[in-house]
Length: 304
Image (tube, rainbow, N blue to C red; front, top):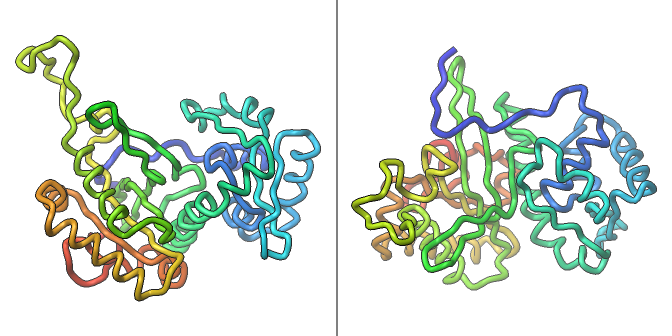
């Protein structure tokens, strides 16, 4: 079997014998928060709902997880790790190096739910589509809130980093993407400026303190090379407004590519695309729903 490595392997896949309570804790440690329905779809989509809700309730009795009730949702629950749950999971192999941000109250949880659950909803669109296609993309192949350094002490925080293995016959292509989830809560100009931050990350080369450029080691280069052999594509997932508004926001992203010289240079090297979340859910994440930010007809994100 041949393999095309666009990026590094996506990481370990959970063992089939891994206990479901362990998986539930790992998912909440990775994604910060998830509804009962989302946990069911991620981990046991073909099983009865009680398969997931029963161990969740036991974990709550054990003081490892808790929940907040979502407003106007027929009392749907959004689950999160308690401080004790975060302490227990920090040494899980899948979560090593992942900062623990335990949520200390239902009030604190309610402040985080809209964006956090929408990011996970976007992940579910890719997971569901990957299962249908036979691609490899599991519940831990999506890491929210990843930060990278920029110059002058600044940093960029991406909503999620996605790991995905696209399978076409005997060929496996390992892909990664930076995901930006837009709920139309910020100005369109501010959304488009995220492209400038990614362009800065693409070019940023940290300079060792006190060492002239000519004496830098041969391994010096762009900071993103510490984690990726190829710069991940950048995908914007939009929701939370009318199609008219969302299409205008996509047009503003395209305008940034056309008008900003550094972003334009990035776009010639790195695939950039945008799609509406509801289209991903209806037509599949690999459907012809992704608008290239360099202009062109909608296509799968794998073909941007």
